Image (cartoon, rainbow, N blue to C red):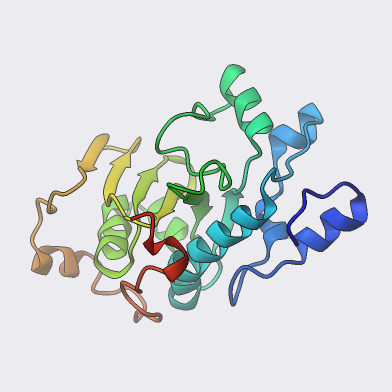
Length: 220
């Protein structure tokens, strides 16, 4: 499917596009902003959206699902129009031209970026009992080729971002707030300290650090 959906039937077809073993495009199209303010959340560049979405789900979300069980999408894809409206009306959307804006999957073919705000219920329950959000952040750092993690207080939800060349940064609005890890740096805690944090996590399932798909190798 390459053209922007122009009917309910073609939008339904887009929603049936399978992005990975566990995820379909429909899960990423829901938007409270779109529903309440009657703004369509439909990709402009469907082909690019699907390619970025497949890389994001395959490399990051599928291993999370296989390790922790259910992964809930809080905010997935956003059309440029919807994201712009959300930013201008202070609805927790970054500017469309913000370099780390991960929700507009079809913003750039030369510098592809994609992501979503997600919740892992298994970890959210532990966080509610007082567990440190950094336990999950460091687990992801040590197991997955993420580009950015950004944590929020409610449910320990976080933005998880895929890029062809990962920046590998970690930030949080949960104490300790701010930038935990800047691009190109190593964590303050060594590997053994990080492993001790998540020693009781489920056994990792998936392929750590998968190779960059050929589709993006030319732009890296």
